[in-house]
Image (cartoon, rainbow, N blue to C red):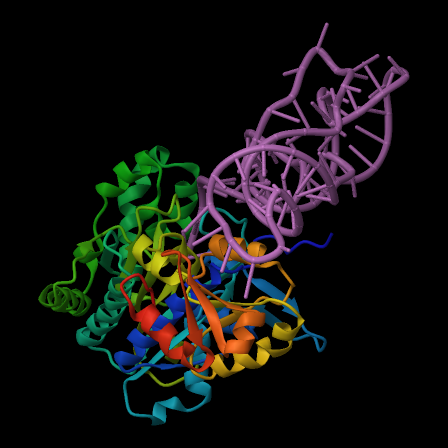
Length: 424
RNA sequence: GUGAGCGUAGCUCAGUUGGUCAGAGCACCGGACUGUGGCUCCGGUGGUCGGGGGUUCAAAUCCCCUCGCUCACCCCA
C-alpha cells in the first residue's frame, strides 16, 4: 500500500468545494482592489530563498525542500510566495509598468517540518503584494483588502496584530539594545532563548515560556529605538485603519520569521487554531527587490494560510457552500437508459446541474441515495414518462411530486433553486 | 530534529488474569414493499487485528524493532 508522503493530504469531495469557494472570494476581492493574479514556479533556484527569506531563518536553515536536478543545479520547492513574485517582477521587467503593481497569488508551498494541527509539509497560501509604493496608504490598502476578504467569509473573531519592525538600521541597533538589556538576566531565560540571545534576540519577544515573557516585558520596545521615519510610517497606517473602522491591536512583541520585513508587520490571529494561531502574516519589504538584484522598489503584502483558514471557516459560509444543488436524474428500464444522457445534456446546456444515475440502481435505492446525499430533487424517467414526453419530478424535502414536460424542466429547476429553501 | 499518545472492517470504535477474540454501530448492496426516500425488521459484501521478528502448546492481547498517524516543542501559514 503506497501512502501519501508525510505532511501531505488529499482534499476530497465535498470539502474541496470549500477551497474553491474560498479561492473564488479571494479572486473577487483582490481583483476588486485592483490586483491581478500572478503565477510563478513551484520550484526556484535555492539561492532565491536563501537571499530573500534569510540565511539565519529556520525556514532556510532546516525547513526547505532542496534537491539537485539532473544537471546538478540546486532547486527548492518554494517555502513562501513573496520571493518568487519579487524574482518574477525583476526578471520580467515589470518595473516598466505603472506603479504600483498589485498582484495576488495562490497555490502550494512546502516546508520540511513535522506535521501538526494546522501545519503541513505541503500547504497552500493566498497572498497579495503591492509593489512600487512606499506610502502608509499602500500598507493600509493591503490591510483593507485582507480585512474585506475575511469579512466576506463571515469571520468575526479574528484579531489583527500590528507592529513596527523599524528600518534595517534600527533593527541592528535594537538587537544590540536587547542583548545588553537581557544579557544580565540570561539565567532566567529558557535554553532556547539563551541561544536566541546570541543568534536572534528579537525572537525572545515572542517566546511562549512565561518566564521569558516576564523578562521580555521589561525589555526596551522597538519604538524606543526605531527611527522617526518608521515610527511615523506605522503611525499613519494605524490612522488609516482607524478611519476605516478596521480593528487591530498594537503588539510590540510581534516579530516575523522572514528577514526581509521592515516597518509595518502584522499577523491575523484566530483563537480556534490550537497552538498555530497565525492565520495570516505580512508586512513591508522595501529592500527585498534591491537585495535580489533589482531596482530599489518597495513592496508590501501578506500571505494567508489556506489550510488553517478552511479549518476555522465560519459555519454559515461552510454550510452555504456544501449545500447540494444538483438534480438527480434516474432512468427506469432500458428504453429510458437509452435516452437519459441526451436528456441530461439538453438540461445541462440550459444551466441545470444534472447527475445521472448510471449504476443501474432501483428506483427505491436511487431515492434512498438521493435522500442521503441531500439532492434537492429527483427526476424520474420511465415507460410512462417516455410516452408522455415528461418526467416525474420529486422534491426531496417537501416530498411533493409532479409531472413536468421535458422541455419545461430547466425553467422549473431554476424557479425551484431561486426559492426560499434554495442555496446558491 | 526532540517528546508524548495512538494504530482492530470504508468510517467511529468494543475486545487483558494471552485460550470460539475476529466483533458492534454507521456506511454500502439486496429483501420485506415487482416504479417511489427519510422509520422499522431481515440478510449479504467487507478485516494480512499497521508491518517484521521474538516468547509460548496458544498472541489483536506480552517483549523488541520498524512504518504510519495525532498532538506538542523548535519555527511558522
